[in-house]
Amino acid sequence: MTEVRIEDGKLIVEVIGWDKIWTLKSSLTIPLEHVADVHPTHEALRGIRAPGTYIPGVITAGTFHVDADKVFWDVHNPAKAITVELRHDRYAQLIIEVADPTAAIALISSAINANPPPPLPPL
Image (cartoon, rainbow, N blue to C red; front, side, top):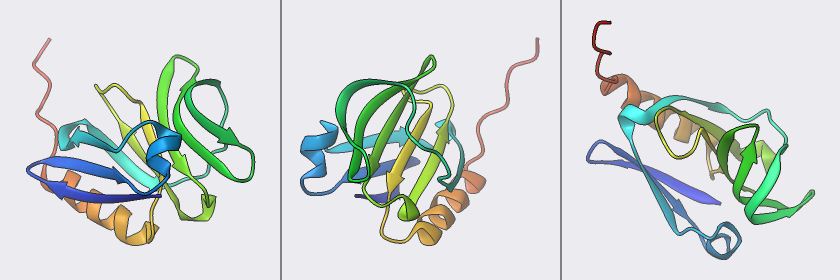
Protein backbone atom coordinates (compact mmCIF):
# COMPACT_ATOMS: atom_id res chain seq x y z
CA MET A 1 0.00 0.00 0.00
CA THR A 2 1.03 3.60 -0.44
CA GLU A 3 0.24 7.00 1.02
CA VAL A 4 0.08 10.06 -1.23
CA ARG A 5 0.57 13.72 -0.42
CA ILE A 6 1.33 16.96 -2.22
CA GLU A 7 4.36 19.02 -1.15
CA ASP A 8 6.11 21.92 -2.88
CA GLY A 9 4.56 21.26 -6.28
CA LYS A 10 5.30 17.54 -6.17
CA LEU A 11 3.29 14.36 -5.77
CA ILE A 12 4.95 12.25 -3.07
CA VAL A 13 4.08 8.54 -3.03
CA GLU A 14 5.31 6.81 0.13
CA VAL A 15 5.52 3.03 -0.03
CA ILE A 16 4.39 1.54 3.29
CA GLY A 17 5.75 -1.41 5.28
CA TRP A 18 6.96 -4.60 3.59
CA ASP A 19 5.94 -3.20 0.22
CA LYS A 20 9.26 -1.31 0.25
CA ILE A 21 10.94 -4.69 -0.16
CA TRP A 22 8.52 -5.94 -2.83
CA THR A 23 8.69 -2.73 -4.91
CA LEU A 24 12.38 -2.02 -4.29
CA LYS A 25 11.34 1.60 -3.55
CA SER A 26 10.55 3.56 -0.42
CA SER A 27 9.03 6.56 -2.18
CA LEU A 28 8.50 8.29 -5.50
CA THR A 29 8.58 12.05 -6.06
CA ILE A 30 6.83 13.29 -9.20
CA PRO A 31 6.61 16.96 -10.26
CA LEU A 32 2.93 17.92 -10.56
CA GLU A 33 3.48 19.14 -14.12
CA HIS A 34 4.24 15.51 -15.02
CA VAL A 35 0.87 14.30 -13.71
CA ALA A 36 -1.60 14.18 -16.61
CA ASP A 37 -4.58 12.46 -14.94
CA VAL A 38 -5.69 10.28 -12.06
CA HIS A 39 -8.56 7.78 -11.98
CA PRO A 40 -9.68 4.48 -10.45
CA THR A 41 -7.73 1.49 -11.78
CA HIS A 42 -9.44 -0.87 -14.17
CA GLU A 43 -6.34 -2.63 -15.43
CA ALA A 44 -4.75 -5.99 -14.93
CA LEU A 45 -1.01 -6.49 -15.10
CA ARG A 46 0.26 -7.22 -18.54
CA GLY A 47 3.77 -6.93 -19.85
CA ILE A 48 7.26 -8.08 -19.10
CA ARG A 49 8.44 -8.13 -15.52
CA ALA A 50 11.32 -5.98 -14.39
CA PRO A 51 12.49 -5.64 -10.76
CA GLY A 52 9.47 -6.28 -8.58
CA THR A 53 7.08 -8.92 -7.33
CA TYR A 54 4.07 -10.55 -9.00
CA ILE A 55 2.05 -13.19 -7.16
CA PRO A 56 -1.35 -13.44 -8.91
CA GLY A 57 -4.22 -12.58 -6.57
CA VAL A 58 -1.82 -11.55 -3.78
CA ILE A 59 0.46 -8.68 -4.82
CA THR A 60 1.73 -6.79 -7.82
CA ALA A 61 4.61 -4.57 -6.80
CA GLY A 62 7.54 -2.99 -8.57
CA THR A 63 8.44 -1.76 -12.02
CA PHE A 64 6.95 -3.53 -15.01
CA HIS A 65 7.34 -2.92 -18.73
CA VAL A 66 4.07 -2.57 -20.61
CA ASP A 67 4.74 -2.31 -24.33
CA ALA A 68 7.50 0.33 -24.44
CA ASP A 69 6.46 2.03 -21.17
CA LYS A 70 7.54 1.55 -17.56
CA VAL A 71 4.69 1.23 -15.07
CA PHE A 72 5.11 1.28 -11.28
CA TRP A 73 2.71 -1.01 -9.37
CA ASP A 74 2.00 -1.44 -5.68
CA VAL A 75 -1.33 -3.23 -5.31
CA HIS A 76 -2.68 -5.94 -3.01
CA ASN A 77 -6.39 -5.04 -3.26
CA PRO A 78 -7.38 -3.88 -6.78
CA ALA A 79 -10.60 -2.33 -5.40
CA LYS A 80 -8.46 0.30 -3.64
CA ALA A 81 -6.11 1.00 -6.55
CA ILE A 82 -5.78 4.24 -8.49
CA THR A 83 -3.90 5.00 -11.70
CA VAL A 84 -1.81 8.14 -11.98
CA GLU A 85 -1.11 8.92 -15.66
CA LEU A 86 2.25 10.64 -16.19
CA ARG A 87 3.92 12.51 -19.03
CA HIS A 88 7.61 13.30 -19.53
CA ASP A 89 8.57 11.04 -16.64
CA ARG A 90 10.48 7.82 -16.03
CA TYR A 91 7.16 6.03 -15.58
CA ALA A 92 4.13 6.26 -17.87
CA GLN A 93 1.79 5.29 -15.01
CA LEU A 94 1.72 4.68 -11.29
CA ILE A 95 -0.81 2.02 -10.31
CA ILE A 96 -1.00 2.19 -6.54
CA GLU A 97 -3.21 1.02 -3.72
CA VAL A 98 -4.32 3.71 -1.27
CA ALA A 99 -6.49 3.57 1.87
CA ASP A 100 -9.17 5.86 0.39
CA PRO A 101 -9.16 5.97 -3.42
CA THR A 102 -11.82 8.71 -3.62
CA ALA A 103 -9.86 11.02 -1.31
CA ALA A 104 -6.55 10.33 -3.08
CA ILE A 105 -8.07 11.03 -6.50
CA ALA A 106 -9.62 14.28 -5.20
CA LEU A 107 -6.30 15.38 -3.64
CA ILE A 108 -4.27 14.72 -6.79
CA SER A 109 -6.95 16.12 -9.14
CA SER A 110 -7.21 19.37 -7.20
CA ALA A 111 -3.42 19.72 -7.14
CA ILE A 112 -2.99 19.20 -10.88
CA ASN A 113 -5.92 21.53 -11.65
CA ALA A 114 -4.32 24.21 -9.46
CA ASN A 115 -0.92 23.68 -11.15
CA PRO A 116 -1.55 23.12 -14.88
CA PRO A 117 1.49 22.26 -17.01
CA PRO A 118 3.26 25.12 -18.77
CA PRO A 119 2.12 25.72 -22.36
CA LEU A 120 4.13 24.16 -25.15
CA PRO A 121 6.23 26.57 -27.20
CA PRO A 122 4.85 27.41 -30.66
CA LEU A 123 6.14 25.37 -33.58
